[in-house]
Image (cartoon, rainbow, N blue to C red; front, side, top):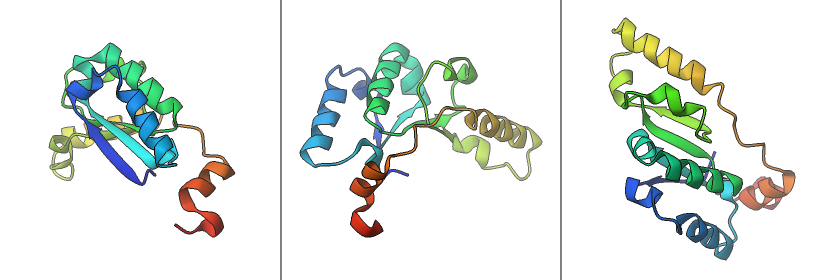
Length: 140
């Protein structure tokens, strides 16, 4: 799990220099991409699908785990999942609130959970990357 997670706005997704800026910040601070999680709302990702996919691909190549936030709030959620480089789905709270009493919400969350389990996660960090994140001897 990342040490810090940043929620990007729809405007940020369209910034062609954002990935370079994040790479520079990680390098200057001697941080691994695995320490920085990135979240995009489903709405921002869908509204800017090409730019979001390109940004996610670049950030994921740096090792940053990518989450799609508020998943399920859009109408075409499942159709574009196979085209986005994602590690996590954060299910929209509207589906979670009544999961214990509403069988439809339960079924939707179960389906999203099942599909989320099929996402291709980032490769496990190497021993060297783990050491950079955790520190020598397994401490921070």
